[in-house]
Length: 544
Image (cartoon, rainbow, N blue to C red; front, side, top):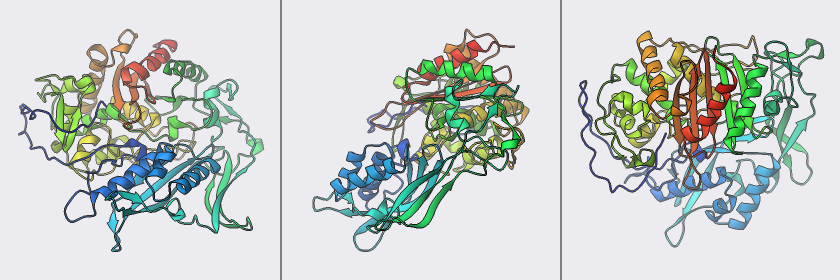
């Protein structure tokens, strides 16, 4: 995905020319996507702007606070409160003391309380290193200052409703012995031989009942240290000693190749998943850095333009567009604020095929009215299993496609931004489903429960998706893979994170019954960062 938002000084959008259907009018609503808070808006204008609702400045201040907190900019977050010194101290001790890394903070709709305060509720997803994610809800009180600015009215309870002068939180870990594991052929796997597997092996299920490290977040009395209640528990039943090693679906050769390939990420945080198209069995899971958070399976990222595979499926399913239809690809398209293509490229008179292969944001956004507001999420769940509960064998984040709250968020979701969230596991699965037509729950351990229910894609749509992905390699943005043997198909993506960070780079690909997805944080572009990683991987594992 290649979107940036700017104040609109653009020329009017040229009319879209298509053989089928009439052009739809554009609706302007203001927005600025901020993925650091799970896609919540950081701009003063957005879904809450309006004469009858709370002051949009209050919502903007609350979302900016959450964005800074989520991104680790604690001094900046604290400066947005009425007590900066205290706020900075508490936020730092809360996240560091509980080993929280990469929190995801998603704002809800603000409410006026009647005493001049505006309340912004939010959902906190706090990844506790090596254990899992602690999820809870809280709310931010915001009060207008004498100078007209809105600030968070600081109090301990906004960090968590039970945090107070009398109570604090304590993290306790239970010592567990590491699970012994083998690959699909019985070869021993360990963090010593495959360092990138460290966060995976640490959470590897010892069977369908779960396993891995165990621990808890307790609420304790500040004076006595006594536990008042347990807020979150992590880990399942330990694997029995006489059960022997856990046999995974991983392939030692693919795993080694994946780890070597991630070296092409240039020291940036990155993750990669490779899985078999015909049964969803995971062949490789690689994370950089090798220790810590399992971002490949549990990460939450905007998937950027790799999501156009799902968007294309939704459009093709209902016959809203055909590959040779002219959809045009102007430099800019305004839906409240201005979206643009990478390097402000444009392709006048472009067909839908060209829009896909060149990853044209404006072409896809221009088709947004062909889908109902909730249709993209419905297609993702019904055909691709996204948002359903997956039983992979380790804790996983299985994607989310919320119904857009306004026209601009709908525009962003068409290109994998807004509140659309995924990770390499999800996008490798999406790729496998697109090229086979059938969703198969990804698995790291044989025999995991499958509670998903999906519908196969029509063969016509599968054929079109495969052709589009192949053309992206031979004539589009995934040309970095063009010299590889075999029928390689791919899609690139560039996902905006925040004004203070470079874009994340994405690429998904398939070859010989294997689907691969890679994200490189702050990789700038998908073709330039994730592309070399996937090229290295597929070069090391020869085509059959």
